[in-house]
Image (cartoon, rainbow, N blue to C red; front, side, top):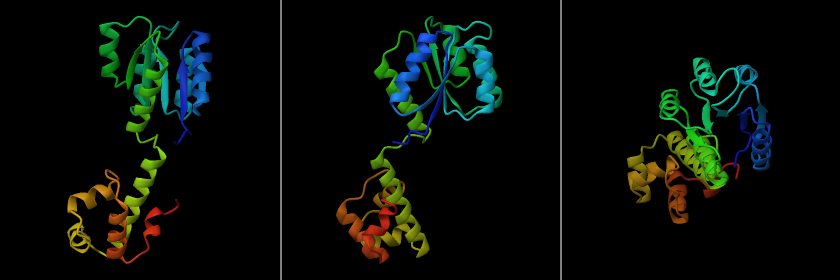
Length: 199
């Protein structure tokens, strides 16, 4: 899995910052922590983070205020809200500012990790090796087909595979069987290994 992912933990509780840093660093993420929301906001403004984990109850600027400020200059960054006091008001406001998850403290580590991985996967930042291979195969089949100016319909006639299946293979939504790959290689007049690219 691609782990060159930067995560910022913003929580005034030093123990939580240290715990999250240890937990996420062990999983291969690049982690920074801040206990001061104003300093954290500057850091988000000046650096490239993929995810911000934000505590709501902070001295000075609250987590909700920080969320609002971040959204003024970055609508895309994934934000996970942590709170010891969940309220309908903060949940609604979080949704309004497009947070990726709203997690109640104390939280379950497995649930948090699964939520984080889902968020990163949805953003296309986390891809497992099998998924990466399917993307590579699909891209190479499509490239080769386009170079020969063949339509999916023509490919379907040449291979005996349905247009729908061919389209799914190219978009990496379906894995091609070995026999399908051989049919595709024959139809495109190339070795099967060409579909695997760098693999």
